[in-house]
Length: 200
Ligand SMILES: [Fe+2]
Ligand SMILES: [Fe+2]
Image 1 (cartoon, rainbow, N blue to C red):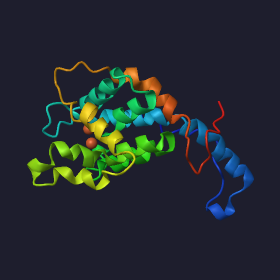
Image 2 (image 1 turned 90 degrees about the vertical axis):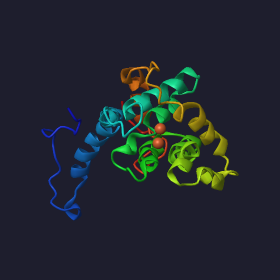
Image 3 (image 1 turned 180 degrees about the vertical axis):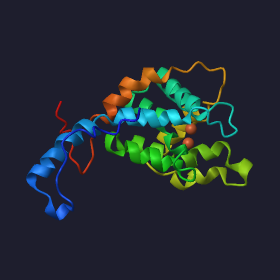
């Protein structure tokens, strides 16, 4: 079941925000943090949509995601990196023409700048392995050659992303990554709605 909050919980009484009161916003704020900090669950629900979506690839997009994350995990990457690996293609269903932007936006409040840039730019870097088969420039990534996170992103694509299409690879199940995802999405580092001011 999608987690869309509790319809039976108290609600504000305003009809437009100009009528809003302190009491109204107390009601809303009290429900925001429990909902927001449970975001990992909704992200995982969305990731599951990729199951069965092959798009012509040897494995479906959920298996590709699990395989990318498993390879990163077994290579000793930290949890933040592994979650980025797991979610890097979560935008495939909502943003067919800009899928890296979707994952980058979802992860932005929770990850460091280098990992955010890596997820946001992975599509261009991954293109090194196939753009030339589609009449495109495989060296499109060269525009970022001098960027501080060029190697970080090139390495992600080389080691974990471009290599994660093996139908015989034994990926870890999604459940194995769930605690890492829940933990990461429970504590934003950068958000206008406040830093990690989450009440337990
Ligand atoms: Fe991708
Ligand atoms: Fe990918």
